[in-house]
Image 1 (cartoon, rainbow, N blue to C red):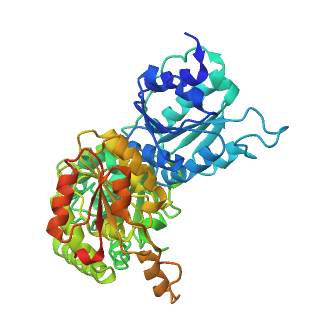
Image 2: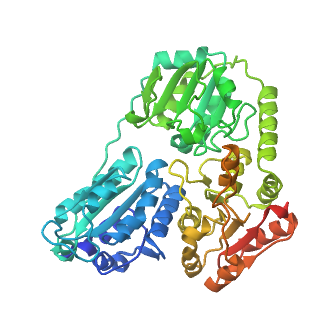
Image 3: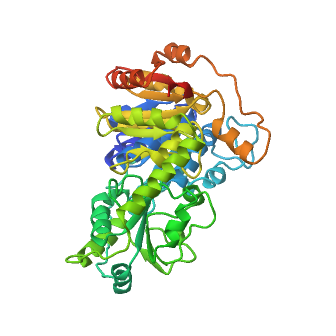
Length: 521
């Protein structure tokens, strides 16, 4: 049946598997809302488009499916650009659909007008396109969903003129069928190099999250050492030769220098993973990625493949293989203990709180962390035993990510535990989204690390011999603010009380803000 295009789009998204949309309605995009309820899609009302974008990001990280957001022309699109940039940096699938003005060349001073809205969005996503007909809108939506499912899952933006959204349109055609092609070529040279290595080392990134069991089996069968990037934490897990996510430690460069073959899977090995310019790779580099633009200049063997397909081929070649490498559990254990001590010396008071928190979390807890001192320590020292359960804004590194992202993650996993970790400065970017969490009745513990300042920035300025400036802010009464939104609020005075507060927060019918201070340890 004919419906206004805005309504047809919601029906199309439902047919393509979309269950939840995050956003804020406005006069420019209200036609998109005409069909949401009729299509059977749940809409989550954010308090700010930035929050809507982070919610869509968090939902996508929890499900592997695209997070979808509806925003208005101009400021709505600008407000969601930071989440889009974060999703682009972390390869998170997100579809942002916005309205746009019918024309901007001959008219000035229109509501929400920008000089070039489409081009602005194009700077923070895989592509940004305008659909001026229903057929173009349908084609772009299918293109975005297919590309995110079959290639690198980065955000896409589609804008549609207001008059086009209002115009009656026929329904979209059936969902396209995507043919998957894979090669079982055993890659003889690559496999031979890996099997013949004396000190093989795997670096596993976020692109390998979906093949944890295959990766673990392959690494163990080879007797290889491994590192996990921050996005790849938990892929190998509790394995005696796993250095975990410690590549940013200065000594880690020396470890990498010892490897005669390095297999980099699903990672660009960015500066945010290393915090230095030289990774330390001196051996032969094999890199596996689905993005041909991600291969490093010194890669000897670029392998354009999904991580799961690569590990299928490697495991087949490993049947009957006896590991004969030079790595020892003792050297790995010693290095990790030494690095933990270094972290404790650099950032006192965090590790005892982290250990107490880790001990009380229920199984399958999904954690969303922000750019905060507590999270920086945890990313190095909190062991993860399964992939895809810790989500952090790497790369783009925006403050305010974790609260709305945790809301999106909790919406994606009803009945399963979700935890937010955020700092006293970062929470003030998106604290209004407490209202959304209360509306949704989410049992979400929000762990607020409150050291009364930008602690990590202060440390960096001191290290650079800069007198700390503008790093101490006046904070509100966070507990009173949480209660004003209708959330629970706790301030434990011991590690045992912290554990009790977190346990009770998972049972509540609303979010609970739990204020932690360095004195808690």
